[in-house]
Length: 373
Ligand SMILES: NC(=O)c1ccc[n+]([C@@H]2O[C@H](COP(=O)([O-])OP(=O)(O)OC[C@H]3O[C@@H](n4cnc5c(N)ncnc54)[C@H](O)[C@@H]3O)[C@@H](O)[C@H]2O)c1
Image (cartoon, rainbow, N blue to C red; front, side, top):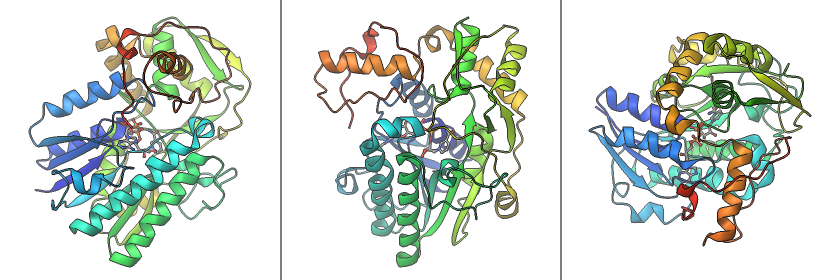
C-alpha cells in the first residue's frame, strides 16, 4: 500500500481524494493552512471527517513558506509514493483583486512541494491545474493541445507558472509529473464560492439567485468523486503528461437553476446583474486523453450529483445555511480585520460580484480568528 502527501487536504477536492485513498488502504499525510479564502467552517468540517480515519496524519502549515521543507517531521526524509499538490488559491475573480496570494500559494507553494520530491526522493508529482488556463477563445471541446500561453487572469497565470516549474523538475530530476487540468467540480461539501453550492443554498433558503449576465453562459460540470478517482488514477507512471479531467457534462446556468428547482421542488427567485468580464463564456473539455491514459470514465450524472449535494445540504443545513457567499464573507473578513489583529493584508476578496453589498454583522466564530498565513 502507498504513502501519499496530499496538499490542500481540508479543501474540497483534497479531502475527497484523501478519503478515497485511505479507503483503498493507503496512508495520507495531509497539509493545509486552513486559510479564510472562504468560510473555514467548510474546511473544519471536511478535516474532522478525515481525522476520524485511521491512516490520516494532518500537518497545518503553509506550503508557500520554504521553511516547511525542514520543520515538519511528517515531511522531512519521509518516503512518499506520490505528492498530490491540490493546495492553491482558487478562483478567477478573487485573483484579480489580490494576485499576490495566488502567486505565493500556487507558484512558490508548488516549487516547495517539488522540492520535497527532489530532496526526499519521491518520484511522482501530481499538480492540480485548471481549465481557466485555456484563455479566451479555445476550441470546444477543448483538448490539452489548445494554447495555454495567454492566461486571462492572475489565477490562470499562476497555474501556468506552476505547470512550467513542474515540467522543469521533470526535465532536471526525472520526477514523473502529471498535470490534471480540472474543469468545474461540484458535489457535497463543495466550495461555497462556486455557483453550484450557492444555487442550492439560495433556492432551498428562498433567497434570490444572483446571476452575472443573461445566464446563457455554460459550464462543463463534473462530480467530485469522478474527479478524485481520476486524480488517483493519475498516480501511475506516465512520464510527463497534461490531462484534462472533467468538464464533460455541459449545461447553461439557466438550465442548472431549472434542474435545482426541479430536484428541490422549490422555485428560484432570479436576479440578473451585468456580466463579469473575468468569467469565461463557456468551458467544455475534450476528455479523450483521460479515457485513453487513465481509463477514466465519469460515472455520476449531473442530476444524480446535484441530488447528492442537495441531500448533503439538507443533512448539514443547520450550519450550512449560515455559510456566507463571497460578498458577505469578504465583508465579514474586512470587518474582523478592522477589529482584530490581522492587519492590512486582508484585502477584500469580493471577487467582483456585481451586486451591491448589504451590511452584515460579523459571525461570532470569526471575531477572534487569526490569519493562518
Ligand atoms: N473546484 C474546482 O472546480 C476546480 C477547478 C479547477 C482547478 N481546481 C484546482 O484544484 C485544486 C483544489 O481545489 P478545491 O476546489 O479543492 O479548492 P479549495 O480551496 O477547497 O482547496 C484548496 C485548499 O488548499 C488550502 N491552501 C491554499 N493555500 C495554501 C497554502 N499556501 N498552504 C497550505 N494550504 C493551502 C486551502 O486552505 C484549501 O483548503 C486547486 O489547485 C484548484 O486551483 C479546482
